[in-house]
Structures are given as C-alpha cells and as structure tokens.
Image 1 (cartoon, rainbow, N blue to C red):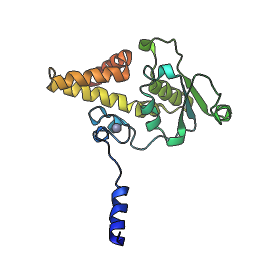
Image 2: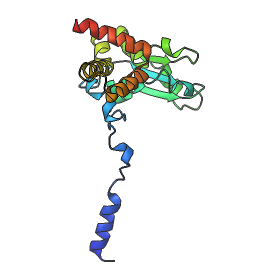
Image 3: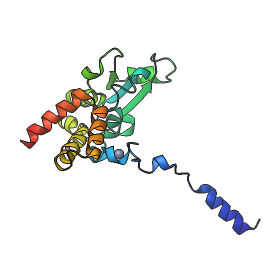
Length: 194
Ligand SMILES: [Zn+2]
C-alpha cells in the first residue's frame, strides 16, 4: 500500500460514526430537537457556592427525575453530581467525603412517593439553592428550561391546535415534566400573559 493510500485509509477510519438516530438529537440535552429545552437554560451556567448531590434510585429513573438533566445543565459541571444506585454510599467512591463537605445539598427522591406529588428534581434544586444562598434569581434562571417548554407549547397550541404534531408534542411535554408540574407551569404562564 502506498503512503497516500495509507493516509486515505487513516482519514476514513477517523470519520466518526454518526448513527441515524443521533442526527436529530440535541448534543447538549440529548433530547430530540423537537423537544429540546436548551434555549431556556441560563446563558452562562450558574456557579453557586453549594453543590447539589442527587441520589437516584433505579426505580425513579423514569418517574421523578426527568428534570435532573435540566438541573445539571443549568449549573457548572462540578456543581451537580448524580449517583445512581439502591444503597448509598456503598460502591460510590468518594461520595461519603463529598456528603461531609460543607455547602452540600442532598436531593433524594423517595421511592414510594406518587409520581404526581413529586417535586421535580429541578424545582427542588432550584428552590434549595435560591433559599440557602439567598439568591432569588437562581430559581428563575434555573426554571428557564421548563418555562421554555411551556411557552413553546402554548405558542404552538395557538397556531396548530388540532394538528397531529401538536398533540404528539403536548403528550411528550406532559410526560417530561409530569402532570402536576405541567399544570403549575400553565398557571404561572397564564398569569404572566394576562
Ligand atoms: Zn437541547
């Protein structure tokens, strides 16, 4: 094989495989572009003094923690850590030390809590930080992605209320944020619009 050929093969092998299902996905939140909430994130990730630790039981992955990515993306990388498991701190290296640190906020979703009554992970984190650090704007900045989804939903609803696309999106949104939160968001944006 000539050197040129070698080079060509090398270049070919370096082209990253791009599976089809990834194409319409947001690279940040990893959600399909149609339901991406990234434009609602704070322009710069917040850097509070406290650090949020989320302990996630495997059974809660699909229920109360759908908003965990919103929480972690609204904060600087090391300000929100997620640990998944049934027992803590077992197997999680360094977790005990982190929990002992000052300025650590622990969020743990209790398994038996009914899905509808759950305070979302995002809300819990946003409210705790706002109160503990006495920065009420944190809360508004951090709830941005949820408000973005809600606004988007209302705007689309006004234009294409009966469209199949709208109905699919609406279903996706309420699945994402949960009924209780969806209702609350609807109320708060109605208040803003009126
Ligand atoms: Zn996104």
